[in-house]
Amino acid sequence: MKSIKTPQDLAINGAAPAFEQPLHVGRPNIGNREAFIKYVEEIFDRDWLTNNGPVAQEFEKRVADYHDVKHCVAMCNGTVALEIAIRALGLEGEVIIPSYTFIATTHALSWQSITPVFADIDPVTHNLDPDAVRSMITPRTTGIIGVHLWGRSAPVEELQAIADERGLKLMFDAAHAFGCSYKGTMVGNFGACEVLSFHATKFFNTFEGGAVLTNNDELADTMRLMRNFGFSGADNVIHPGTNGKMIEVAAAMGMVNLDAIDNVIEANRRNYQAYREGLYGLPGISFLAFDESERNNYQYVVMEVGEECPVTRDQIIQALHAENILARRYFWPGCHNMKPYRELYPHAGLMLTNTEQVAERVVVLPTGTAMNVDMVKAAIRVVRVLLDEKR
Ligand code: T4K
Image (cartoon, rainbow, N blue to C red; front, side, top):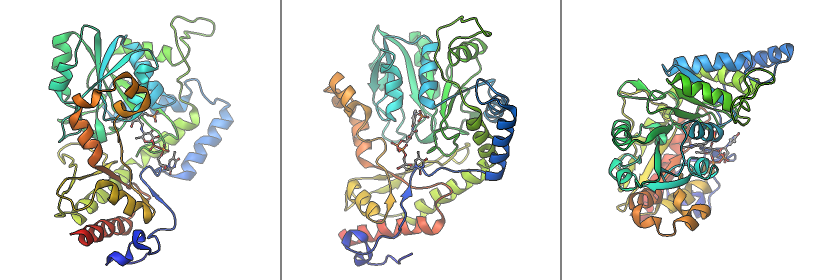
């Protein structure tokens, strides 16, 4: 790896890139391959590939136990899990969500002809601001979907209080929050239900996959019906439904990745701390901190570039990309600025000032088991040298 000491060592100034192969934010973490292949052999031997197979059932039980919650309803991906949860809860009309989230939170509503209404976020936590949520409630509002962005819990108590007071349903998009806790309670136990994603880019993956966690028996039963066309027995359909089932091979990936999860979290934590320490004290550079008294998965290393920084967020991204370090601008520019929603709400930005500001300053840095400390140090050197050059 090249040493990066002066501006001439930077790829944006003509030097060779630090890495030949790109370093991605979403590199999959993969557990023991032999154990996975053994599962696959067993799946072939059983000739049972999907439809609530034995591996999927065992996987559901392990995920529910891990989150200390009664039910895990595993699905083919997080987006379908969101759609099914939304429908099972009977949401309609308008539902309040943050705009500062992955587009799937928003699409899961509009795909079902429900109007997503964007509320602003707290600029410190990046999660929904309860006062902003209150201000967006109308007679058509039926629910709130909080997002535990970056794996840090949304203001669950305040949102629950609003939901109770106004007779609204509350659920959470917990796509980032597998294995995280709030005040010692595991995610999965808040609101009516919470939705996980196991996409390949998530720190815990099943290739593609997702699940709904809930303590509500009736809701779990309804979602189990809905993910399998509403079938109750071979010839009997008792509920409208879709195909949201998790396949056996995906569940097998989940089983081996669950066995490896402590190592992955440790790698994420090590990288997060290395980035924070390595970039400490630079003007305008800060990191979103995790509460060490909670369970965290540290899967997103979120750096913020403030006004005091001598270079812009996009100049930092450009310098990192030139080195093949593919940092991301998640979730710029905010869902309300994406075409389908910009057309719906052309002036939404006026109400979403924190969202717009945060979206302009976030850099998500590569982490996970594919990143070692030397790679992190190289990314740190790039940012340090770039800033020194401009000071
Ligand atoms: N709610 C929230 C809050 C979410 O963040 C998400 C998903 C969902 C709901 C929906 O859950 P799913 O339906 O996806 O289960 C990624 C993921 O595709 C997406 O799952 C995730 N959030 C989002 C935060 O990130 P992108 O736009 O970054 O692009 P993608 O998937 O192309 O991957 C990013 C990079 O990762 C690639 O440039 C290369 C690397 N990569 C990717 C894959 C798929 C690999 O190295 N190997 C791979 O197999 O969306």
